[in-house]
Length: 332
Image 1 (cartoon, one colour):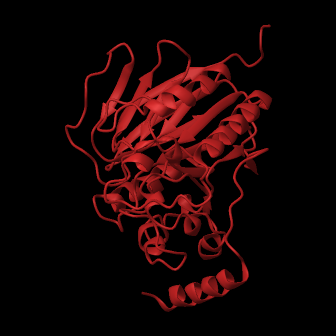
Image 2 (cartoon, one colour):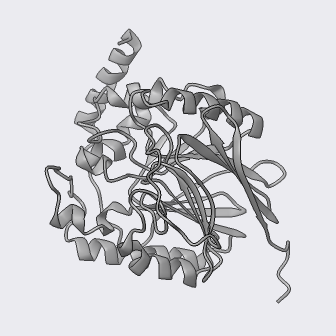
């Protein structure tokens, strides 16, 4: 490991002694980040999930193509849909996995932009506060990870939701896993506050496009399938507030499902490293627009009137394209 890394970690540990790590559950308003759009008002970003394996399982190949596509599209930032460090999150702010799975993997110039990141269930098996700590931003300034937050990018608002605490089995049937629930209990109150905060923020939003990001699926034909708790508790809020896209990871695939009972598109980008070949269930072909059981990532380009989605494999091949449009001004 480099001398620079050792110096950086020494600084991080010194800061850790000075900056107490704490978390205040959502109770009033989600934290917001202001993200500049391009001069013409447009926005472009990449989405990758389920990636942190120290370069293994084609993680480095995905990262390489992300760099190429990122430069081509002049991306403004990257979104991570969670499961950032396998198998059990980080052990602390000094865990070398942060360097080996993130810092030295995503090295392309185009990827040196903010990484807006949510936690996945594997991240909750480690030290959650480590991933949330501002100390990691001292190590790599790209890293922005909170439980739930908002990115205001002018023409679009992106709402990041902490989905792992919704899933009952992690609490009731943890098997041989140990989850870090510090800052979550009492769980019912945490979830109630989060849903209220999200609903309030979505209602106040005047953005042309509303996008919600979480780790877990709401609708998926992949290995994990639908997350019933999110379908019951989160989905009604998205529908009531005219959300355009729900983007997730969790299933290690690339996928698009078009809802027949709302205007929401369900997009899975969980192919950042290890994929599950052949592990796919039947889905109504009227809704299933695309499914790929390999590694890859997704790009999103947004203007005031259109969103363009593209899925790529580890060779940079375009697997699937989809677009939707809105009128520039309301006719109401």
